[in-house]
Image (cartoon, rainbow, N blue to C red; front, top):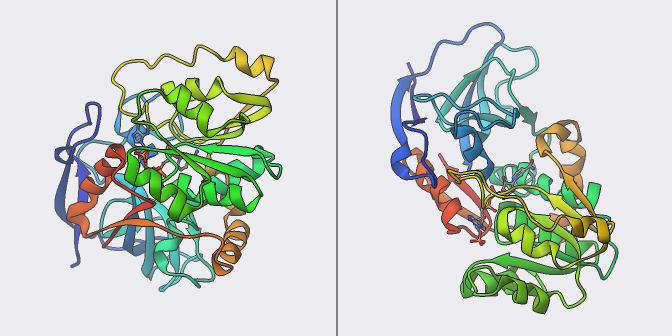
Length: 335
Ligand SMILES: NC(=O)c1ccc[n+]([C@@H]2O[C@H](COP(=O)([O-])OP(=O)(O)OC[C@H]3O[C@@H](n4cnc5c(N)ncnc54)[C@H](OP(=O)(O)O)[C@@H]3O)[C@@H](O)[C@H]2O)c1
């Protein structure tokens, strides 16, 4: 019998998640039934958005609330060890929505994207070639309408999605401006991710900092953060600007209703556009998009950064780090 170490949701986080909200337990791996797979999870991806489904009644209808006492749902890079399922074979590599655990037994009804041609290190298929990189790509190319010379502003610009979004915008000829916190991360945005300018969100006056860093206004805002930052950015948009609503990490831990931006009339006067999108709904486009992104990696046009921790015991910590802004690049745990 194989023992499975998994991270269960011990209690629902109240506000910002804490390591004590999660508990590592050891459970037996169940016997395989017909039509099932046994997978070894090689890497776990930590995704800020999953914080939403740790609450009861998040109200967004995308996924049900995670049950208490059960392994926490998450994205994994997994290898098939055994299969009684017609569509999968031993040795297949999958990007999947499984759980924070060492092994998963599944009937493959979940969100699964097989990696048909593994040419890059496996961890890339959760980061730049996984949901995070593809979020940057789909948001910018489906809705950004970037023209050479446009100013593209990215929030959480040093993060998993943001670090790739800034680089893709640059490939499309934009002048890129990133928002992060602290002088160290802001310096790295410019030196290591090629941003033309950086804004420190911990500074005193965000409005003034945006005006300074974006003297010609903002044509595209890739929004990972939402909240008051979105309101500050809206004050600086250009005519026909595109606001790409990828995420709202500033509001996921709120225990009270967050007021919306009070300046949406900016969209009217600037005849601008806001676009929300959910990356996983594009599952059928993943393979072809990975090929485009892979070519950019090979050409050296996409640089990859990772915040990597080791072992199942550190998964809870890695998740909490996201909300402290500890990471530079994709947060991942190797099992
Ligand atoms: N639409 C989709 O389908 C989709 C798919 C994947 C991800 N997303 C979204 O993309 C966004 C980025 O997610 P990720 O998992 O890649 O995380 P990440 O960007 O790697 O990490 C989160 C970053 O957000 C910043 N941050 C944390 N708390 C903040 C706050 N209160 N105010 C402002 N900034 C804060 C921190 O960066 P700094 O300290 O450097 O500012 C932190 O490093 C999230 O909103 C996520 O939900 C959406």
